[in-house]
Length: 397
Image (cartoon, rainbow, N blue to C red; front, top):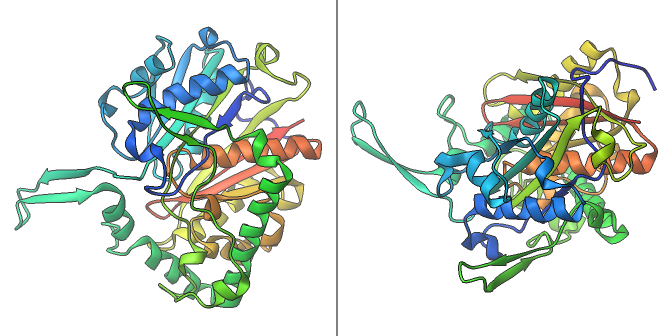
């Protein structure tokens, strides 16, 4: 393994101090009925307890979400109170990049002096709120915005929807619909392999949801809404835009994910396997041309690896946020890397897109895979609203 100096040399992720809820699809579970911030705090406390992380050792909290939730004004202090701890912290939001940015910011907080920073990311797309905005310069005077659906359907900078961005990118790279369908099929196959092998049981935690009276609302114990698809089913789906079908794009879902970032001096106090070292190596962000969002992650990866002096052949694990199968096929077009070799055990294309926790779960699954492989560099990347690509490298040794 090539030796590269880490970007946050003091920060570490203790092995095993992580976990994620399952991500049930929109309106299919008890998560559609609860305050997701409160649920996330309580679930994080449950997960860290199962991982034998002493909660009273947490010094700071970074939370990430993108969809308004009741009492969001109070952000991290409220989530911390639901975890049973009075610690400071803040909220971060960057569309689908939120889950990775929160982890990177936690690393920066450790680099600057904290010894134990918790990360909690979450979102509920089910019943997302509608906001009413006074617009003095608009002829309508007052605008109502459905936070999830209106933003997915309209980029105010370009006027295009996210589906249109995927179609435009597919046309730029002259993608073959058959290859895009093959990629989508492979992603489903990888997810069900990860589920059947027991891999997902290492990172996903079943959680019970209670109402305000303490009575059971339901148990979140599967990525509800995920069903296997055949090649024939994918081939028969109608194109919503060039190379974009319902089977080749992700779906709205609900969920949370959490992990711990500590200093290298104290990492062994928290780690389930102290001999494992997980470092922050580097990150970057780029913007593609307008409405070419699926292209942006590949550009970010190219820039980051060039800066680090590493190549894709140096990576042990590649995993990404891929709202469209188009993303992964374009990644191969730009970088030459075989899309069959990435996203083992599942990815957001299949298990869903609650936004805030999406890339946190991606990272957790990737780190677990790297440990199973005996270590190596882990490349995490994805796109975010506004034609943004983000990429980050971690080292497991």
